Length: 117
Image (tube, rainbow, N blue to C red; front, side, top):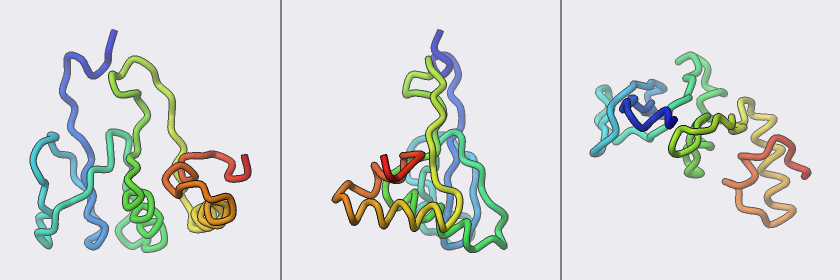
């Protein structure tokens, strides 16, 4: 049975410049209540870092800027395949270097557990 078939869960939306996140129903553009800039959809399984942790928010900005979301369920919700996303700047740096060396798109490299595979 599909998890997302019968219940419409809220999505996490994040404003990287203000370093805040909110859960909202999916739909039209979601403006940030603090600055008014449209927030980025972070997915169902986003865990926002503390507001004071600028380094972690820079990693979140890179992941969301690459067009990725923090999702654990598949599109229909039938299977649970946790997706890897970098959490530290060292992990992000290693994936950027590997993407530049191999010519692989950064978005694909950010989803890999091991950047050398």
